[in-house]
Length: 162
Image (cartoon, rainbow, N blue to C red):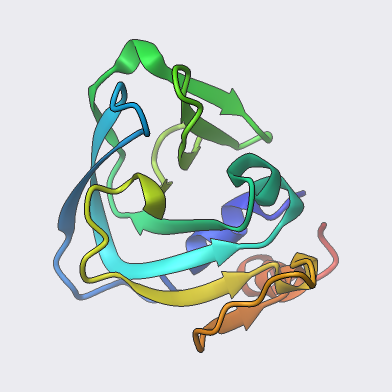
C-alpha cells in the first residue's frame, strides 16, 4: 500500500473542523481547466513521497477539500491518471499543470495550492513522508512532521505498510 490516501486525510487532522467551508476557485496554467472547491480547514499540507514529487516536480503542496471538486470549465482538457488502486491525479492535457489528487469515487480530494486563484488565509501546517524528503531542500516553517510509518500507524494502526 502506498501513502496517498493516508497523507491526504492528515492534512485536515483527525478531528472534524468547526470552521465554515471556504469556496475557492482555481485553474491550470493555460486557463483551459477551471474548478471550484470547498476548503474545510485553511491548512496547507505537503507530501514528500516519491510519487507526489514525481507528479508535482517537487513536494506536493495541497489543501484538503470538504466536498467533491466541481469542474466549471474545460472538462475536455482535464486529464485524469489512475495512480493507485484508490487514487487518481488530475492535470491539464493542454499545459500539463498538476491540479488535484482525489479518490477514484471523487469523495475526497486535495487541490494543488499553486492552482488556486487565491491562497489568502491559508497556513502551512503539515509535512508527511518526511522520511522520503531528499536532503537538498528544507522548509523554514514550523510544521507538524510525520514519517510514512507514523502516518500509516495513525490511520491504520499498522506501521508496517509501505
